[in-house]
Image (cartoon, rainbow, N blue to C red; front, side, top):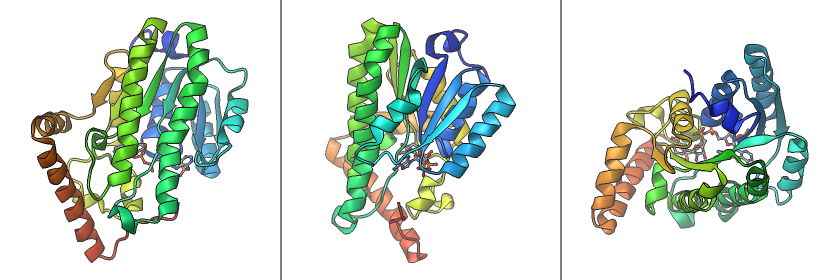
Amino acid sequence: MSLSKDFKQKYGPWVLVTGASSGIGEQFAHLIAAEGLNVVLVARRTDRLQTIVEDLRNQYGVEAEHISLDLSDANFLDSLLSACEGKDIGLVISNAGFGLKGLHHEIQLEKLSQMLDVNCRATLLITHSFIPKLIERGRGGILLTGSMESFFGVPWSATYSATKAFVLSLGEALGNELRRNNIDVLVLAPGSTDTDTHIAQGIAREDLPGLKSPQEVAKLGLEQMGRRSVYVSGFLNRQAIRILTKLPRKWAVTSMGAGVRKTIMKNRKRGRNSEPDI
Ligand SMILES: NC(=O)c1ccc[n+]([C@@H]2O[C@H](COP(=O)([O-])OP(=O)(O)OC[C@H]3O[C@@H](n4cnc5c(N)ncnc54)[C@H](OP(=O)(O)O)[C@@H]3O)[C@@H](O)[C@H]2O)c1
């Protein structure tokens, strides 16, 4: 696959990817390195990051570095900025995130709060810190990973959908603010993608029909940089959002919640739980 001809020129030479130790983020890293851009990868699992970094260096001959960080830590930003010191970062991908499914009051508050920190606070701090640098260099991009749940409050996934609504609003607004600075902003809103996040949420793969591969989702996202500000990956997913946004909001919320509840109850009957160790 090949991204647009000016991808490297506009978004290189360095790209920051959070949540790069697995799933969609790992695929962002591969696709970007394949274009000859250097990467800084962020996540908690050091062993996985080390392996990915070595693979990228060997396969594509690029510079690749990693920093193991918990983005829910109050002080992660200083370490992140030190790791990026001296690197001309042209594209910032804030992708790290996770969800928890279940009734709001039944999920541990500490875990919900951690989700808020990773999905929202880290995105806020990272965009706020890197935007002045992107403006100064006069070109670049920001990609934020949202979700199809960004568009509605989803019962049984209340906090996750609220965090992803934050990502959608932030990204849309930043896209408009930064248009004049030659900085592209995209919110990628994936539908169900075949990553470990579902297992962590206690949902079996077979209960998620139409799963896309993380590579396909990452590729679709990168291809949309500079073309639009919000992109729902997958034709059927886009149609679903189109239809749901035309329904009375209450119906759309009820219908999405019913789908999530049914899947959770089915998995709970099989003994799966949606409160992973995080
Ligand atoms: N898969 C889907 O169906 C789907 C649908 C819509 C949106 N999304 C979004 O896509 C993004 C990527 O998720 P994925 O599906 O690719 O799942 P994944 O494979 O579980 O990836 C999540 C990434 O986020 C990192 N992360 C989680 N908590 C972190 C923390 N406290 N500090 C630092 N890094 C952390 C994980 O790394 P470590 O565990 O090593 O820290 C991992 O690299 C998320 O924002 C998710 O909400 C996924």
